[in-house]
Image (cartoon, rainbow, N blue to C red; front, side, top):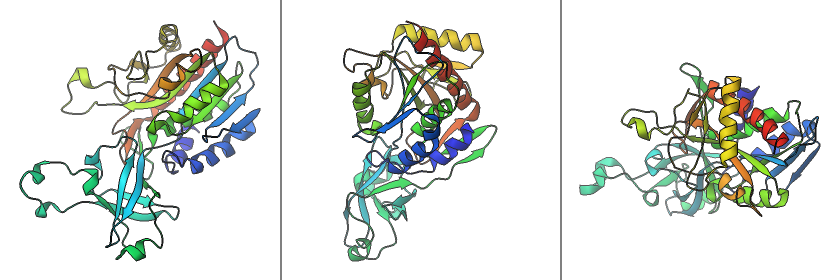
Length: 342
């Protein structure tokens, strides 16, 4: 069920600020299991499910719905689309990438100046986004403007699938994997009451989670994310951060959060007691919705449990299914323990 849910989520389109398609799917799937369900003004889904007990601590579990993508900024006279990135995308991964553009999901391809026309230092430099365009097959500006306008979004056109030994590939695994985990936990019988937030606009400044945390005013929060795995050739051992296939990732600090020490120790203890495979995030890099949740109102005790993912923020990420399952079990176990204990 977890993998099937992720497969469907991965192929939905929801660049930051236009998460409608993802939100509608999540609401349809979880509504039968929730006691309360609302959508706030920033578009985040806030779901409440009663458990068998009233917890000591009001707990918020959070995963973000949005994905990185592109937004059309202009249409050239020859019908090619200029664009900007939405969220952090390495320009090196873009050339030749198939995309879907606008509400009609028009197929397009990202292009740049051909290599045989490059001169001097141009050949040794990666092209910049400002020098790229999206080709939708239009022959003129007038033809392109019949279907696409500035402000339209473009998403990577990537199919979800299995490959290798227990690996899964797809787009938007950051953070549709976290959304899939929360949806799986909602379907289960819970030991205690919990709030679930599917946030918007994480990739452009943690905006949805900030509003959700302020309105919910939780005592504790668990953020479920995907994080960069650099376990590839050419990266020294100390810089790999985490590895695909070695379990759930537990963070002690990143660029936006120093995580609650009590929860940090608790999640390790739970993982060891239950035989759930885990690893440290060995680096103070990146950030997630914890960065705006932990300092909401008077402060929120916060933990982050992440899924190791290769090629994050690219047209196609890679994860291990066993890691996904480990994250799900560890998040559920920590949620119940943390909520019921001071």
